[in-house]
Amino acid sequence: MSKKITLPAEIELVEFEALSQIEQKVLEKAKLVSENSYSPYSNFQVGAAVALESGKILQSSNQENVSYPVGVCAERLVLGYAGANFPTEFPTIIGVVAKRKGEESWASVSPCGMCLQGINEVEMRFGKIMTILILRSDGQVFRAKGVKNLLPLKMDDLKS
Ligand code: THU
Image (cartoon, rainbow, N blue to C red; front, side, top):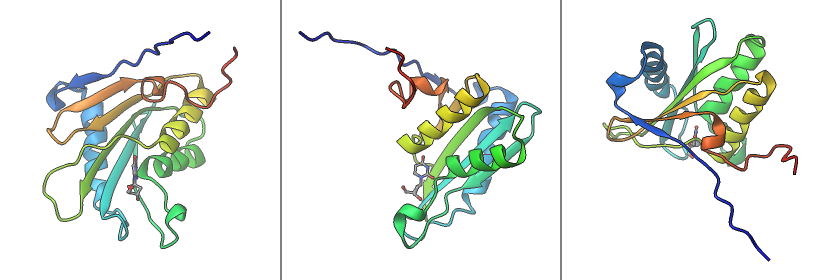
């Protein structure tokens, strides 16, 4: 016997101008820091920024390595920095942007599975959900409230 299970995933599509001020600021910081991407192997420049509960914004870009798996995504770098330096402050918002080197327009990017799992860890640690903002190439933004909307079967204690 088998049973089909549908997992809920809710994502909003929001005009940039309709985001809150702090959400817009997070994405602007992510755009700026993507210029510091070290990505000679993929030429894919990713920027990620988080807003802490205090309103402080931290940011990072992806940093690659000639031994490819050693490279780290922008999201996990910024979350690691937040945890290392502001361990008591929950990052309420994370924003992600990306651009292919040499191109004018932004590319649509979704955080990879490892980064989503990384976001999950921070949500579990604080018992709170993060707002995840993903810039799309058309300038609009995907907004998800909680990582479960992007990674419904995240590695977790499934409890059943
Ligand atoms: N990358 C990120 O930094 N974040 C993502 O969410 C997706 C991928 C990086 C990893 C690698 O340096 C490059 O983008 C191409 O995959």
